[in-house]
Image (cartoon, rainbow, N blue to C red; front, side):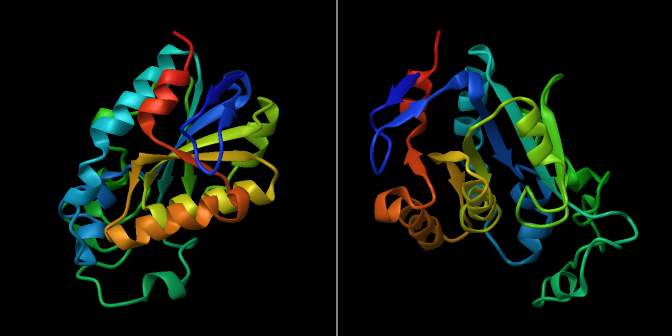
Length: 222
């Protein structure tokens, strides 16, 4: 057990043998120009900025022998798993399934659906394709975690207030101890990220803990 003293609201005891690093939706469709995030009118450079931090934690975690889970949000080519309440929402320049600069938006197998190259999964890491915001809904994630005896989840990725927070709340309800890397997550809206960090740690860590990446890396075994 390695103690992360800088964690909020109080120190977090990391048990690497029973922990997984979960990187949420670091996909081209959310992070790069021409994808779904940009089609909603967002400044994707905010999300691009965390890639070096996420990569640094990922490399340190791998070097320490920790297990990694990557998630990707996307839908089947026939969109049978994309409800109209999701596809028809708002007035984006491109809707889910439409053809954009990186192929069909948020469709499995299209270029935009891929994880950015700097954070690409390697052999032995789990990749979860999810049709919703949470990584537990309609996916094999829970079974995979149980098979490996995982009890702690360390989160990074995008966006903080949507897919990251949703998955953390799902995990909390299932009994996992959850830690969010503060500088390894980002939102298109800085105020939403700040509010999410506050909500997670409120009331004695009602959803979980947060900590800076440097503190997490320092707690990993050499």
